[in-house]
Amino acid sequence: MPSKSAKSRHSKSRDDAPTRRIAIVTFPGVTLLDISGPAQVFAELEAIELAGHGYSLAYLSASGGLMPTDVGMMIDTVPITSVRPDQVDTLVIPGGPGIWRIRDDKPLMKWISQVLPKARRVASVCLGAFALAWTGVLDGKRAATHWRYCPRLKDSFPNIRVEPNAIFVKDGRVWSSAGVSAGIDLALAMVEEDFGHTTALDVARRLVVFLKRPGGQSQFSTVLAAQASDVDGRFSALHAWIIENISSDLRVETLAEKAGMTPRTFARTYASRTGMTPASGVEALRVETARLLLESRQISGVVEVAKRAGFGDDERMRRAFLRHLGVSPTEYRNRFSGR
Image (cartoon, rainbow, N blue to C red; front, side, top):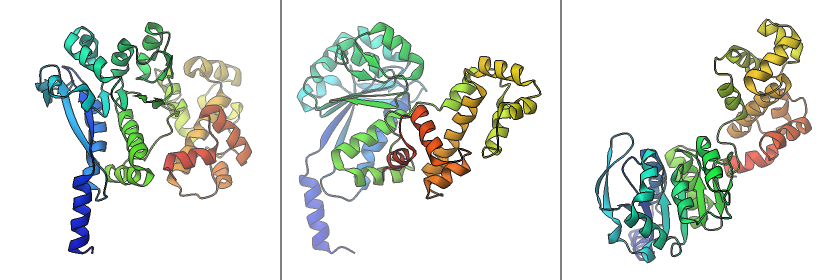
């Protein structure tokens, strides 16, 4: 156990350490998790007994007071006039169904515009990207938002390079994340940038989440995208069977027989329902299986993972990962686990 004098020195160093003010903008109809997810990450630093760590959270609204969220819960806020623009280190604009009305809130938008050039870092979560877009700060930059609204952001603001598959994007001092829980990934990345990997990993462990999903990783998997296209779930049972037999020989004739169709009819129907050929579907499921094995680290060798996932050899798996995720299996494991 540390001595009393060591504790005293530690407390003093924490007291003397400057705090970074994080201003989180709220409005009627804001998404609760867009606020609480990042806020919990930032607040968790208080539980870590390391010197020099500190954020000061401020929940702001145009007039202050209780602010209703999208789920009916209220957030106690202070008015924007209580925080000068030059007092903000990081500005966070969450999303929610009420985001479309704040464009007409002149005092709030004026305050945001005043903060933008002064803050060290600005960020949006989910639909909050539209608020940043209205100010022009995203012009010429890469940005992310909820996958459902990527086309709208791209069409409305052609100068923004929308990345529909990204969980979060950092372009200079401007950050943006995809929908809802992706704000947690964004906040953890900010903690890592400010205080280092070890601290961010400690926060992630306390919250029982992964340190970070790669920023360029898809918001949802290729398999989920296929399931979304297969609206009546015609191939759900087949997908489950494939996963159970992922290391088997899954040629189209085998899949067609399992689905009760001729190979030609099966290939045509599967492609029209899922947007993928049967071979691509099997490969996507194998990538999903390999991802889980790599993340769990229950199997240490990449070669063994490739065999378990049905790729046969690690080179085939490497090519598949590059096609689907843009990274090699080794890089994916390192980035995902943060090691």
